[in-house]
Amino acid sequence: MLRLQVIPYSEIANLTSESKITKVLKIAKSNKIILLEGRLSSTEEALLIERTMSNIDRRFKGIEICSIGDSESQDFIKKVKRGLAQLLLGIGASGLTIIGPASIIKEIKRDPDKIELLTKNIK
Image (cartoon, rainbow, N blue to C red):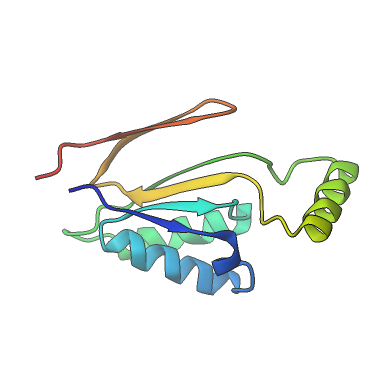
């Protein structure tokens, strides 16, 4: 059975990077695919990968991660406009991140506007 867990931006917006990573890793280790509203920062992604590597064992084979949407590499003006719009309209972070256990996810294909998630046969 394939299990998904959606994490809205509002649920992680006020967490520290360490708390976000702990939350995501705990869910992934329970064999769920995470649909995260928004993106982790590049520092947070690196920390997630580092923490994942130290948790690999017979049961937990690692994670697959993929994001689409706004990136941190936007120019300053675009960041200011988006931040102002989010503040005024109450919009959460834009983008989408998929994180899941490597034992379930076979492959993630990313185009600029979509993600294709291929899973392994789950018994």
